[in-house]
Amino acid sequence: MKQPQRTGVIRDYDMHSASVRVGYAVVILLCILMVILAVFPILWVILAGFKDLKELIASTSIFPQSYDLSRFATTWAQLGIAKNYLNSLISVVGSVICALVFNGLLGYGLGTLKPKGYGIVKRLVMLSLLMPTTISIVPLFMNIQKLGLSNSFVPLWLSYGANAMYVILFVQFFESLPASIIEASRIDGCNPLQIFFHIVLPLSKPICAVVAIFAVNAAWSDFLLPYLVLRGGELQTVMVRLFVFSTDQTVNADAMMRSVVFSMIPPIILFFIFQKQLTENTVSVGIKG
Image (cartoon, rainbow, N blue to C red; front, side, top):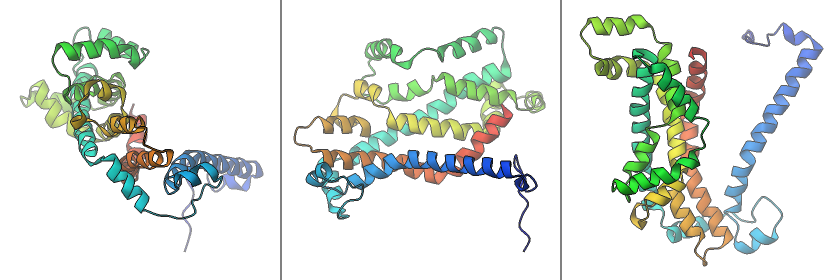
């Protein structure tokens, strides 16, 4: 059976050159090294979770002496993280919806409608990318307190509905959409909101997938704002629960390792499920932008 021809930057014809083969081998080795550097910390944490405290301190081997899952079950019961998983899920779902709708609407206005003065707003949005997010924590928390939104998921959702990076991604994608589609929708009598929700948004699945994955990862791993806003134990997210758990003087290092594994499980599962969509959509957005 004839092998398919290699296409892309390096073709089969190029592989006849010794310098190309050496360069290709170097690139492959660098990719393997980067994979090892990325996977090793995750693997080390998971394997360390199988060790007890004595073995964790004394052993220099990455592999545990035994793979006893009962230790994870004990830590799960001690941590009581099932309720926190649900809280994090509520935070993530609301954050993704707000990230798509609110940032998408602003991107739609700046990239498609382009009203008078849109250039100034666009520059201000891009300028906000230069500002560290930590400097906005104090005024944001003060406004949350004044509005009476403490101990609620609403501030967490809205904070992801005002993300400059997501707005820029939407603007770049919307600018690449054919203007004829928008004009045809206007002729058919659609108002701007109808065009956005019924025409533009369905055509924007690639960028919506990218923004959604970014929002899921950010909302799941966020600690500071949930810690400040969700002060009640009933609404704590996974990251806040891990911090509270780590401050308990009865918690050992081995139990803390296993609790970190519990926090890593959902993002890893999501990555394996959506890795193909993430890579394909990121490439397509980069080309269209």
